[in-house]
Amino acid sequence: MLNTRSPEEPYLIERNTGYFEYQLPISVKAVINWRGQLPLLRNERDEWELPGGKLDLGEDPADCLAREIREELSWDTTVGDPYHAWVYRIFPHRHVFVLTFLANYDGHTPPAYSHEHKELVLLTPDEIDALTMPQDYKTAIRQAADRGHFTRP
Image 1 (cartoon, rainbow, N blue to C red):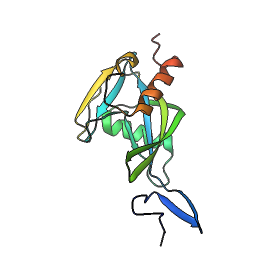
Image 2 (tube, rainbow, N blue to C red):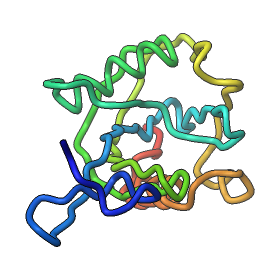
Image 3 (cartoon, one colour):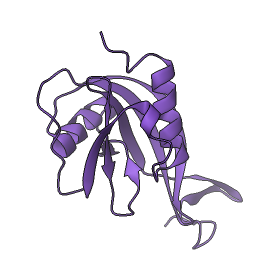
């Protein structure tokens, strides 16, 4: 049986007497470039988020992300390197470790979002400031733009 620090902090697990560490789900997300725009999805909390999802047991993070993008957008993407990581405090008792990757879609088919989300938009990085979205997603998008990720040939 795992001991947690408190019912309000179920993500802190006691490893040695008095020593607690995070035990968090892992979510992989993608900043996808498609023709200089990125797809964002509206979730059940009415927040905009990057495509991606939870890492399954034994799954490679890049393979997980490619699978999630296929499920959420019907796109086969090229997943690049991870470049931004953070702990997202969704609720006081629910934290998730988020690992963000760069990705590209070179196809011609517009994205089609799945039943998991309420809405999809295609935006440029300059259009994200006014969105209801966790700040670290905005940071990841800005970092991708600063790296030239959205530069069109």
